[in-house]
Amino acid sequence: QVQLQESGPGLVKPSETLSLTCTVSGGSINNNYWSWMRQPPGRGLEWIGYIYPSGSTFYNVSLKSRVTISVDTAKSQFSLKLNYVTAADTAVYFCARGGGSYYPNDFWGQGTLVTVSS
Amino acid sequence: DIQMDQSPSTLSASVGDRVTITCRASQRISDWLAWYQQKPGKAPKLLIQKASRLESGVPSRFSGSGSGTDFTLTISSLQPEDAATYYCQQYNAYFTFGQGTKLEIK
Image 1 (cartoon, rainbow over the protein chains, first blue to last red):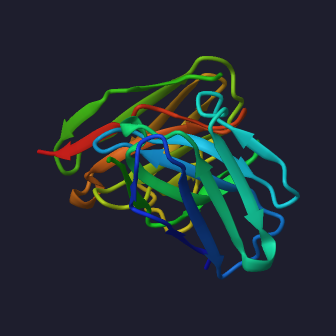
Image 2: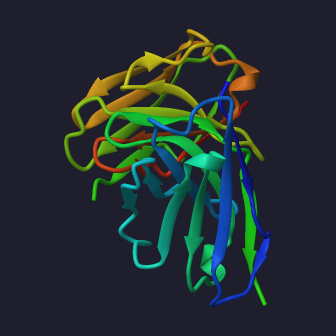
């Protein structure tokens, strides 16, 4: 059973960079796409982007200028960086397996709340 | 970008009722559509992929249909544990989620 766990700071100051890591266990990080989504409090889900272990990345156009997703296959981890955050970036951030044109998100992390505040 | 229009936004029904949620894509997506169930404080759970393919372990009262631009999620006989928010997701071109449908039990 694939398991994912998000980790990173729960509080980030405005204009700084949000950094999260997702650790994958119970399965190989290779040969799969890996995604980041977020959900502002009381609102719906928003796709941020996904990565294939070869390094190919795909981002939501609305966030593309601020987002970087990377992967470390040796550590079975993939990461999210979101620059120049504002209060509007306050959300629960989820990592999940899936991406590309054929693979929805079948395994999810529990999510981690990141608050942007000074 | 492909937009997903999900309706209704809220739904109240009784145990045993048949419930239908719809999702419309702004352009044709073949059958690259998934449905998720999310309970408060939890991650979404994949129920259906490829419009109608039920995930292992999901009760058979859940079903999905549609192709092209119009899709439905049906719960044939509503149970108390089905109270949740449901989302559609297209994965034909990147990902887009519908706005969600909050299902309440009367």
